[in-house]
Image 1 (cartoon, rainbow, N blue to C red):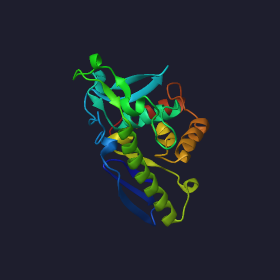
Image 2: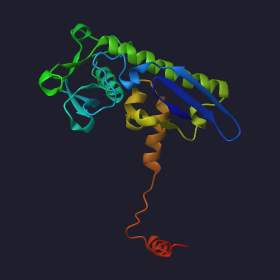
Image 3: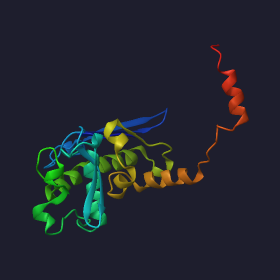
Length: 212
């Protein structure tokens, strides 16, 4: 399975003998578009969010003063708000945040001198985007006649996909939980080979030193 997330969600499922491809209009939320305080993946964009004691702890690209929130920050924020009960499973944000939005960065910490908040409208934008992608994946698998259990590799392409927290994306339903289960299984079953004191590695190392 290959997934490329952006304004359009392109995806493919298959093997050497047969490949099905499709795309779905996800909207610009994954790129910070249509988000009230959204921005692209530029220095200062909030790219990671964690809630601690009801307050947001954020990281920005390049460690710069916050300038807005990009796609990965949007996913993190929704995950954290859902985990703490500020939004419910339907995406409804509790008061007082429904009207005020949830504060991510104070004005004094932003490069524009304004607060950066996450609003009910932003939750809905992400819902539309993630629902389109997930529905596309499920349709593609159904048409192919396979299941996640039979998918041996899942590739997530692009800069957004590379930086995205896969566990949080799975927890909000953007990606199937099977992705997370597969990673956990790999983490448990993987065995590391220490090369620093491996005699065979040293022999191969010397052998391949020559340009031949």
